[in-house]
Length: 293
Ligand code: ADP
Ligand code: MG
Image (cartoon, rainbow, N blue to C red):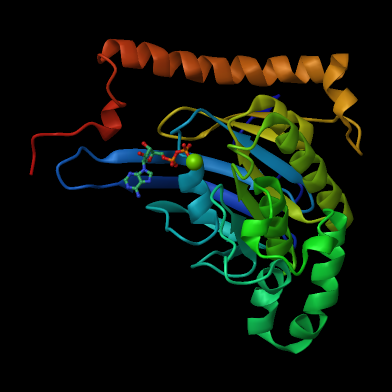
């Protein structure tokens, strides 16, 4: 375990697909409310080709950070660098998969998956169908290519969405609690599919979850976030063997790593609980309503 200062001490030059978040701060200001400091002094590194998982209590700023990395929002201060260049706005370099399904209901699965490359033209457009079919095959959906989203189960739709993101060949794939709401078995299968794609593509992935077991099963490295305002509290290396299968979760090594993460997260959960008791069950004071207009 080490402190989450996020500094990459290999060298100062970031490599392709490497992401560095430096001292990011984000405050939401809503008229009539006290400012909500969602992120404060948040620094971390997402190493190239690694699967980094961010885990933290609900409402601690995880999605805020994901939105900033994907270029959908801007930090109040601090920097987000990809390959050493500051991210300014959204691009196909960093693609995000959300919890909500985003497939277009009027397009077949294949059309959905190839839509992005079809807009790009060139070799990406030409190769889109074969690449899409190969990805769909990896996640067991090749026979559903001509079906519409409504004809697929929730888990199948999630798999198709991952294919739709991967076909764009992003440098970083951000997944913001993508499997939340799925039943336990479907979720476990989704995790296995994701690991299969991760090993096949070698892509840099930044996965967000509030589930410790999901984090540990997937991660090369787990980053534990504090409660609001979010910052990285602990970095835990997960050096469990790959390819990972379900039985890895019963090993002694897994149990030891899990207890490190649990301890760190538990402290944050306890803080929220104490805080809520102190203010009579209201939201944290950074987000409380004021009398000001
Ligand atoms: P998480 O994803 O960890 O559950 P979020 O990043 O969604 O947390 O939210 C962190 C805090 O920022 C919450 O208190 C939330 O209410 C607040 N917040 C998030 N987005 C906005 C917004 N667009 N406007 C105002 N407050 C926001
Ligand atoms: Mg969220």
